[in-house]
Length: 204
Ligand code: GLN
Image 1 (tube, helix red, strand yellow):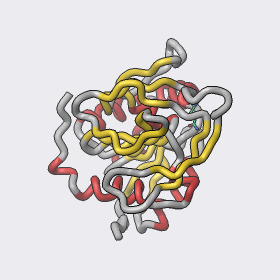
Image 2 (cartoon, rainbow, N blue to C red):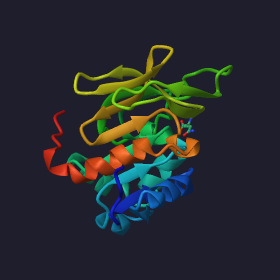
Image 3 (cartoon, rainbow, N blue to C red):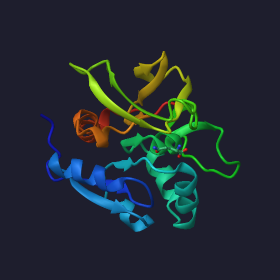
């Protein structure tokens, strides 16, 4: 099992369900650091961006002065895990966003917000994930979907044929909430990418 070994791992704590990520990372032995201001970012080796409301997080990212230093760290190859709204914020292109919504362009995907429609606004599913043995229980809440994944992006799981879990180098994003299902395997992948940092190549 991958352990966090006391590593300082940031959790963006402007809005959304950051507490659940903090608990899970602590359980894995990492040292979660709440990130609310640019100074908080300096000490962390990677960042989790939680689910919540991407438009609200976008406003707060800009108001807190975090947007630019965060974009710079991601550009340098800092590992990141983005869940749901976090996936939207890390994407290269956001469809059905607010016109002034900012995003970080850390993974070459186009995501459409609230894309599963009214009947499937919230649902749960057991996903087959490439690289994981056994199904991953996933909770979807007003989830985005990936409409385009660039050539460098690995699609690791799909629902109805649409990508819901993607990775590009050290950036892992899910349309669902792994932190709510109590399955630590995606967080373990993220912690693993902290130790593999030197091999990371950002190529777009
Ligand atoms: N629909 C939300 C958004 O656009 C994301 C929902 C979530 O994070 N559960 O930000």
